[in-house]
Length: 279
Image (cartoon, rainbow, N blue to C red; front, side, top):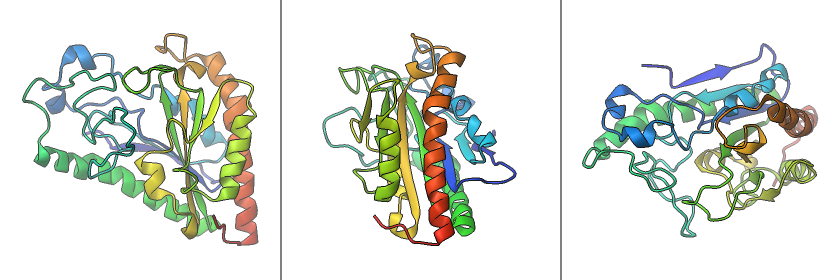
C-alpha cells in the first residue's frame, strides 16, 4: 500500500506554520475502485487538483507541508470522524466515506457501498494516521517556537451546482467563526486576503473551515488553525483541467507568499516575546 501521506520538511523551519493539503490525493485502492462506477470516477471529480504544486514554494520559504496521497472518495480527511454534518443550512454534505459526488452522482454500484465495518477500517487505515501526524508535527513546531499555526489548503471549482447555484468567491478564509485562531492572526489573514487585486474574497462564507481547522485550532493552547478555499480558475485554466503556470505564479507572488510572510513574521514576534496569544 502507498504511504498515507507525504511530507515536505525543510532542513530549517523558518516559520511556526504547517501546511496541510488533505484533498489533492488521487489514489483509490483497487479493491475499492472495482466496486465504483467507472464513468463517474474516471476524471476524479472533487479533487483539489494541483494544490500541492501551488503550495510547493512553501518548502523554499521554510514551511513544512503534509499532503494526503489517497483520494477523498476513499475517506474525506476533512469530515467529522463520526459522520456528523459540519453545516446545517441545507447544503449537500458528502459523508466521511462518500457514496456520492458533490453533484449527487452515485460513486458505487448499487449495494457495493462501504458498510459500517469498512468505514471503521478506513478510519484506522487512512484517517487517523493523517490526523495523528498533523498533531505530531504541530507539537514539534510548538515545542520549538512556543506556538504553531496549521494552514489547511483547499481548492474548488468556481461553480458546483450540488453545493451552490451561485459561483464561489475566489478566496474564502475559514476560522470556524473566529474560533480556531487568535484574533490577531485572523486579522492579519483577513487584511492580506481582502486587499488582493485578483478576485472576490469572503470570510467564513460559504465555508468556515472543515474538521481539520475545527479540531486542531486551539488558541488557548497556542495552536491556531486557518483554512483557505480557493477557486481553481485562479491557478488553473478556464475549464479547470490543467495547471496554469502564469496564473499560479501570480497567486504565489501576489497573494500566498505575502500571506505566509505576514503570518510567519507575526508568529515569530510572539515566539520571541514568549507571550501567550489569547483570543
